[in-house]
Length: 170
Image 1 (tube, rainbow, N blue to C red):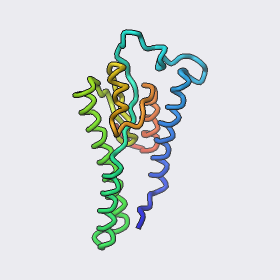
Image 2: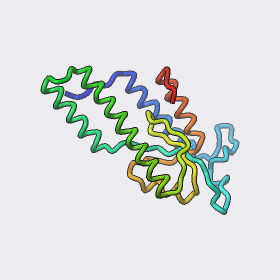
Image 3: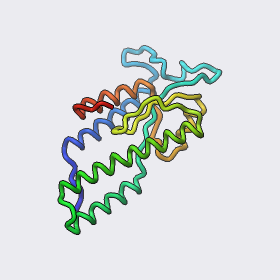
Image 4: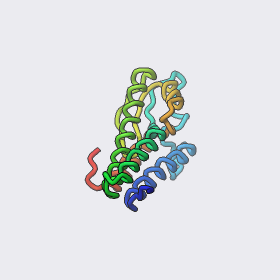
C-alpha cells in the first residue's frame, strides 16, 4: 500500500518547496523585482568577513524516512493500523524526522561552524542562521543542507507556512 497524501498536505509541501526554489532563483539576481539591491548579494558583504545572516534549507535523512515508511506499512498490512492511522503515523514520522534534521544541524552549526541559529520553521526545513561567511559556506558540506538563500527568504517561507497551516504559531 502506498500512503495517500491528502491534497492539502501535497499543496503544503509543494508550496514550501516552490517558495524555497523561487527564492533561490531570485537570490541569483541580487535584487528585488523593482531592480533595487536587497543587500543580500555579495555586494553587501565587506572584505573583512563581517557576520551575515542567511536562510539555510535542510531535509531529513531519506533512508530514515523510507525505513519508517516500511515499518508503518508493515503495521498496516498486519492489520494493526487503519489506513487513516497509518497516514497520520507517517505524517508524524516525517515531522519528527524533519525536526531531528533541524536539531542536528543546529547542534553542528553552533559547535563546529561558529554559527548562531536565530529562528526556524520546521515544517519547511528552514533556519535563519547568522555567522562568518566561511562558516556559512561550510554549511554546504553538511549532508542535510540543501541550500543557502537570502535572509529575506526566511520570512517568505514563514509567511507561506502560516498561510498553508491556519493556526500555526511557529
